[in-house]
Picture 1 (spheres, each protein chain N blue to C red):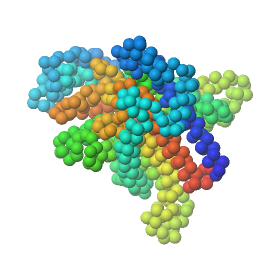
Picture 2 (cartoon, rainbow over the protein chains, first blue to last red):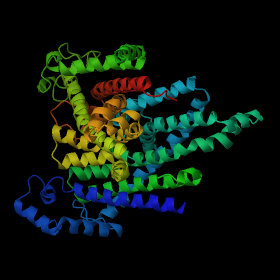
Picture 3 (cartoon, rainbow over the protein chains, first blue to last red):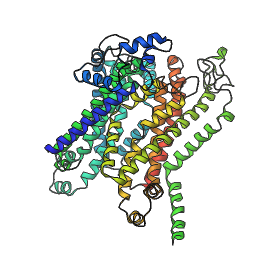
Picture 4 (cartoon, rainbow over the protein chains, first blue to last red):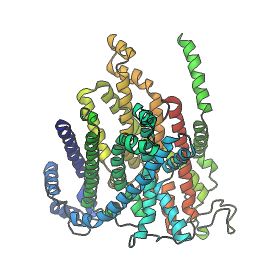
Length: 306
Length: 290
């Protein structure tokens, strides 16, 4: 277990370093970040002043080490637009994204797991077919469009929910429904196929043969083993919900991280964009690493494999 | 012997395709949309960029105020909506194809190398895949397009450089399965070059798998392009892109919801067609789905 743990953590560390280098490098994609910050109408002297003020005249590796060095201590630089520490700005906005992401994740799980189990109990039954329709439509409908149409129907036509913003909890209803809709199909599919595998095993047959009621067979024996692939996927899905809410946040005018990133991009506030990419990537690495470790705890066989 | 097998396998593959509802419906729908995209200049009744500010926001045919020469109405600048929808198919399919060419070339090459050689090459490439998966894709794509200068070429390059992961994962697994097969061993024994084995022997053996990934990824790219254009950092105005049209129609969402309903439906239809086609292909070629 210890060697598995150390190996897994080493890989995670390497990914973190690479990801941080990539999000740092992104700033230089435009060629000269000083010109990007000065804007299209900026004069050459402005760009030069910015270059010195932000230290862009130093060697790249020095700039990176400087940036990552302060990032480790929680200092992600200054926002150019707000002239405030990036950490503070992100701190103010991260709550909305986390709330939206976690609630959508819980809703998606609460829908997907029972549906997946029901579909596995009767393959090709009517629940299975409904599940398939949800999955196929979920893959084809663009999330931002579904969000807009939901606003038109439930916000404008019926006036059931606020059209935008998150001043009250009702503002979260539509975004959560739309966002979780996209996490359901995959979670459901993996629950279903995991359950079908487990239900065909000898120990499930034995449990049923000794007369155990079906709900106990599922809750005590089958689900625990079927849940293994679900753990990895759930971590990936949660990561995608958090980073993918950028579109949903802008549709529903929620002031979360995604919307902040988008607005910062439009006003060339690169330090904020960089920091958000870094934070979201690290969050994803954290989630998937935890899922791997959790899986190794649940199933000792996995500890040997890389 | 070989001729006999060819004669028996080829028609059966076609028969399988004709017998699969997904492939048939998806394929037909896709063919129609491709035809519309190719013939766009002929089919479109108006110039998709021609503005007429005296005829702004005319409703589509089911409204009383509809005008016969604009069947699907006009947008906020008086441009013919049907013509923009038709030309929008070009953008969606063009970006989809362009990105797949880039991402497929990168992903398939990496996957082949990792799967065939194993060892440290595999470790490095697997690490690259893990790293790529941890990046928030929409955000990185947005930032890269914004900083790299927004144009169709930048958009295709950026998405192509980002979306190779699924190609790499799938070809890697397939190459691992193939590398110990007898015919590959035989080729190595007679001294065939590595490049020959990789690209002329292993690659053709996984074309069915790759085709399935292509269809999944085309759908993915089309949705991503629409999302980026919707956020104003993908296809630039006045080019008609369905995602951009939804963004432009958003301001009039209260009174003219059809402005977003139409391009959105077109997007759904296209992605559905690609998905049905791809899922059908997977059912035919791959092992039975659970």
